[in-house]
Image 1 (cartoon, helix red, strand yellow):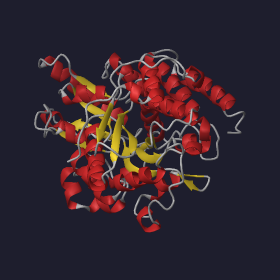
Image 2 (cartoon, one colour; image 1 turned 120 degrees about the vertical axis):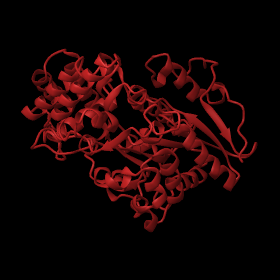
Image 3 (tube, rainbow, N blue to C red; image 1 turned 90 degrees about the vertical axis):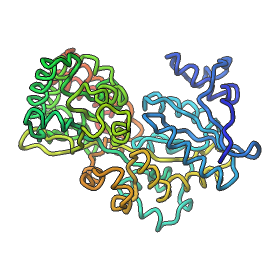
Length: 453
């Protein structure tokens, strides 16, 4: 087994250390500030493999057991190749992670060789990433979902390789539905009524902390994801369409957000306005929510031996926006990319090839509930035994709605921020949906320079 060294200090990576120190202090970082002295605080880094030789640094997320699953995969490659790897835990908040990446790459830093990037970032970061065509052969590449591979091609360059995909799921307490003789809701409106009924009954029975529904409501990318699901389920469009037209200001979108705002302090705690994925999971897994929206990663955690809701939960597609609506989920997922500034791009590319392989994706699916990007694994017996809903919800995963990253290009992050802020204001009672969407349309028109993205 690869040797794990003692934690390193931020002085090991001067630029990375500075970025983390300022980021966690809540200070806006710009390239001009990079000559500030490095804070001497523990670095979120682990070292794997032999004690000598070139080092490959790879960023890993840390939502749930994500970091541990990444570590074991990287350790397998280190053992097989004899290379050293330094694992870097990046912020859970995708906005903070992107800001960190952008600062490092803008400074042409080689502190990270392999980046874990969100499905909506290839267009934003492509100029700083190497072309990975040839790292895997065409036959292997064709095993991955075509739409995700296409997403990772920018200006005819394959700037990332799919690692795992994601789609939002509707988690529910099947024991409570059975207890109160309620069926699984099909629409958001039915969910609202059922959640209210069971919440009231459970509180009267002694659980004063019970809530009906929790979701990711903080002002960050996760809220863009949730709100896009609400809009699309109401057939209200996708913020900006594929032709670059701003479509978000319409009556159905207003209806969707008005319904979501009605949940706050009724079936949803006020605190949800500060929830990301793990806060939601904490409430639901402790037995204090009837329904939850979250990603597939939560499934194995909630069915662990010490989980209070083990064997009490079910998973279904997210709900329709009324009888004329549709089941929908926002496409998520992460890719692996190699920095143009890596000192060892060939070795880093080999690590990417290993981590995105069918064998490693299968292992990650079985032990961590991470959705493969390789179609054949959705028919694999071991994968389906660990995640029964992978087969049942296959269509949800392959037909998830994309965020408007391709249409808006490098301006996607600004578009998303304007959208989630408008939604958060509506949920918080700061203006109604109709007013906030009208204002959002005007703002996005300015961002797009009148539709010229």
